[in-house]
Image 1 (cartoon, rainbow, N blue to C red):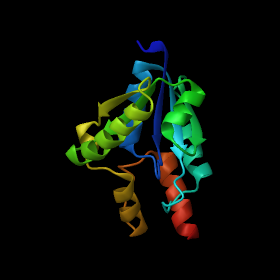
Image 2 (image 1 turned 45 degrees about the vertical axis):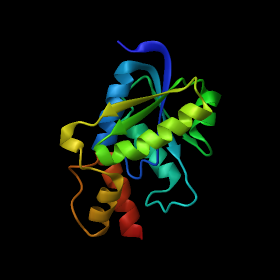
Image 3 (image 1 turned 135 degrees about the vertical axis):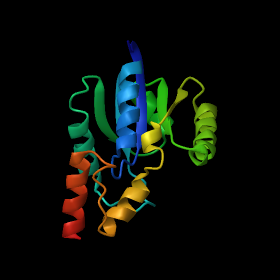
Length: 164
């Protein structure tokens, strides 16, 4: 039973949303009263899908989760968390390589906002090797990524790659 008072933010680029992301979202929705999927837009990154497509994909894949919302944000994640009243930053971990980066970012967030906790959820072992970068690489070279992403993400990627 999720804590009805706690709001968690799961932030990322979700370019594209993978089954690994969806696994973390599903588990977060069981733990927290509300989970906000915050789609970030880093100007130094090059995205396959525009922000509105990433938001739309997430809205479709989480339509059956009544306590999950999708939003977009710019700037510091802790500032966004404060704006929406979130006390938890939700992060997924796939492997030890994720841990080093996530640990560093988590410590910086803790230093800037000691009242906001970072919670790590382990990814399902079946999805441990799946990353958005890998999915984009395979798809851009004509490979089949249907077993790595939910159908709405697959459709958005195909539309974008065929139009490119």
